[in-house]
Amino acid sequence: MSSPNRKPVPTMSTALKGAQIYFGPFLVTSQVLTSFYTPSPLPKLPHLPRTDRFPPPQVFHLTPLSFALVNLKPILPGHVLVSPRRRVPRVSDLTAAETSDLFATVQRVGRVVERVYGGSSLNIAIQDGPEAGQSVAHVHAHIIPRKRADLDHRGGTDAVYGMLDGEEGDLRRAFAEEKERGTKFPAVDNEARAPRSMEEMEAEAEMLAREMEKEGELR
Amino acid sequence: MSSPNRKPVPTMSTALKGAQIYFGPFLVTSQVLTSFYTPSPLPKLPHLPRTDRFPPPQVFHLTPLSFALVNLKPILPGHVLVSPRRRVPRVSDLTAAETSDLFATVQRVGRVVERVYGGSSLNIAIQDGPEAGQSVAHVHAHIIPRKRADLDHRGGTDAVYGMLDGEEGDLRRAFAEEKERGTKFPAVDNEARAPRSMEEMEAEAEMLAREMEKEGELR
Image: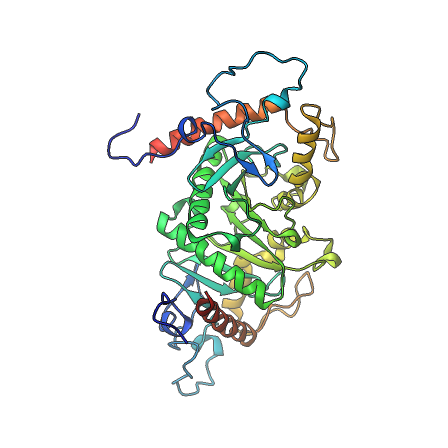
């Protein structure tokens, strides 16, 4: 798996064990499970909605200062977010170490989602403050894999940004709905694109966690 | 000006002296002047267009691995670019040191343009590859200061992205026109927004260079 010459890369199975990560006010790791790979040790509690026991483990990668999470309503397949672990609203609030770690993570995660989702380019965008369209006051870089003509039906390459800033990209609303409704997501949105189920997000997070480990071993 | 405890920050007057910086195929520092602050030592050569002697010095900040330049056609006031000095097309091509230096520079330049242009937020965007809208194959982060309601006349906050990816944000075309025509820019474009004169860009670059030095001293 790893040679003694390789610098160990924090992986899901070790780094995420027991971690509680907040994206803004929203918990995006499990409160109960200690890792994605540990089967639940809890008895079944059918009177509780599933979210109360297992908040969706959206985080798929963790470094000393940053984390990456899958999206409730990705604009395109593989659209993920990278955030600093410290909950600060602006890029200028980040320390030098946090800035460096955040963008090293953006680079590594970008490489993986581009490969996994068969992209040939990436949009990387930070809405740094409310006047720039930021809806959750916690620094986050959007990473969106792109391929040729992938948004022709929506008006072309630049349609991604309108989607990012429009209702589809409203993370605060999406996360609030998720928190409030548990698994009962609204069936439709204005773009006729339903938010994903927690099972789907969890499966994607597990898959991307494995791919991140692979990337760590490859380099 | 500076205390002995402060780490010296590379400034325009020292770091840019004699530097020749390319943004993609386009020279964005002067071929002739050794710094922005040195009056031209050349005799007047009225038979040459001014661009042949003084390509527009658009670069206003230089670090060991990155540079920042003003825009020919800023989408909003203070819209600038930050690039690695090594001409590579993709973020994944950057070394760890280049990635760290680039985003430390994005953070510092963002802080300065937000302050100087009276913004309260920033859009930070990288079109990482042609399918993401990249028009010059040299990694560049757009930094755009934002204020409340600054694009209401264009359709709201998210209009910035359409502008970034549309004709207004076509850096290759803008730079090619600049190179080809010298000071004779087309009088209008589709957005009825004329490219700026070299004098205007140079004045902005000088002003921002001084502000970057000030920022270095402040921190």
